[in-house]
Length: 59
Image (tube, rainbow, N blue to C red; front, side):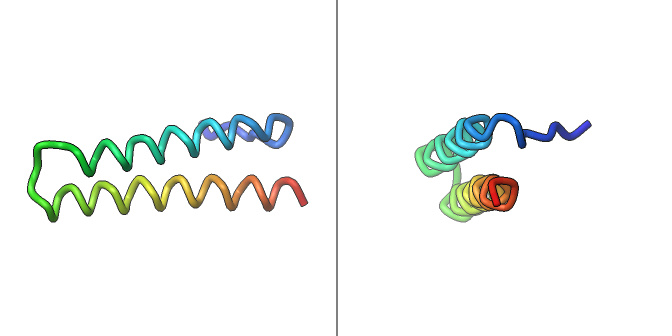
């Protein structure tokens, strides 16, 4: 079940920060360059999505 964080905007920020950290970790993993880049892009897309959801809920 998806949680709605409209009452707690900092939850979006914390969740997005966790995905950004995961993206950075993906760059430093012991995998091929294509795998690291794919994981980084997926995690950053997730972080950006959370940040945009926060902006929509805040308006």
